[in-house]
Image 1 (cartoon, one colour):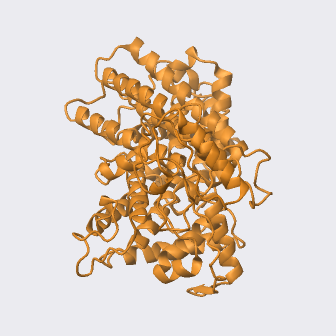
Image 2 (cartoon, one colour):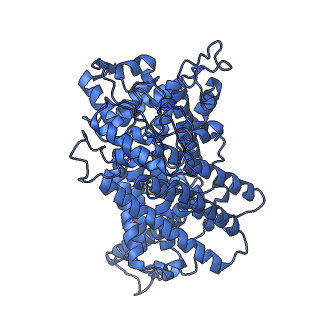
Image 3 (cartoon, helix red, strand yellow):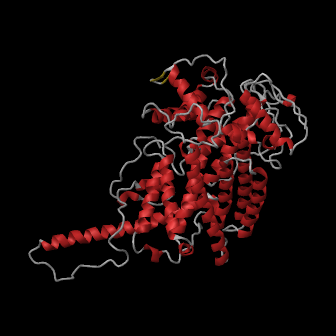
Length: 599
């Protein structure tokens, strides 16, 4: 392939990057001219990836992995590992013509120009690579185009780096109010759509397990994007630019926004257990995946798009199967798993980085959880084999998340869909703990990975009382209950299936897990209260003039021993997230862990 080099005046690092990119694609693609690259937007990093590269045939270029190695520059050293070999890096470089940020005020909360620059820098360094829909990093221009997007970027950038403990709760509440007020302002601009995409990706700390505003927001902006013609991947489309609908954005902005919207919509559909009605993986998406765009799209973003496209394919097939059955046939799940194995081998070769492989592993877990929703009269032996493989995949997800956190601080900046996938993996592990299948596994290894799941939830927390922190307390309670003597015999005949929520897709495993553990804790709590009442009666009888005969009124509880973990201090109102018929009114006042955040 002829080596056409552009930008000979670029610095040495960029030249070296160009050479590496050309060498990585030399054996796989035909001749490509560097003049195919768009010169219209100077803030986008140039790429020599040819427009004919097929992601489903050729693995992503080594440029992404190489560029991610250099992403540690300028990050806060207090939070960064020593060897961040796979850290994502933004493809949006600073514009030298940017003027200093002007001071702003949100309601009564002041932000100096330095504060704004600080939070913008944190956003583009640590979060933008995961969802690169914003194609301009000038704070002043962003504020002029859309104040909501401006404050959303500050909110996301401050999640881990807030200079004040009151900042994140304040921003989340104020932005939440602005978002729902903005939804009635038709038409929504592409900047507003991008702001809501970021909110769905890094949801507010007040989100609940099922009461998550992401599903409503994703659906709303899907229709708004269609009205602007964003799904065509073209800016200023003549058929969609009329009256109030003036599409004055670029083709690049339309493509990135449409890709991000489909990723968010499908992710929300997966973890909420809803039909994928908000995602439309059309030809614009396929062109982006295949690299047939006149501008650069990072390979990691394209792999994530490919992963969510396949999840969309899986959910549609499973939903069609559930229309005629109360469970999912293991044959269908195995076919989907084999199909993904083939596709994964094409898109994740040795040049894919750790985060890309982790995203592909999460797709495998999303497929395998359907083994835990078997059809009636299933084969017990076949179920055991499939569920044990699902457990090993879930354990691998937990271990890989730990490794990514050590390398790139993954748990500090991970997205809401990543968090939900880790919750799914945790629930698979905890379902195995309270099942008869534990006899086929290493008990100590299971307990270790369950403890790691609790630790991961704690490290994903950004403020007291947010969803990860509440989940960590809940899982720790389940783990304490597991260690209580006497419970293993009660579970010796239980299969780790999730038959209670078959129509909630993969999220049914999460709901089923929590309900079963809650039921166990409910039984334990009642027994504990009975024991306390018996002790009080005995104490009263000891002080009466005529005590009863020995043994009178005493009943020994043989179901459970006295040594059980105390669950009365847990915020059991959290269980309302998935147990709609449970009324905790008879409980003692729970400890409030919400710290005043709006729900």
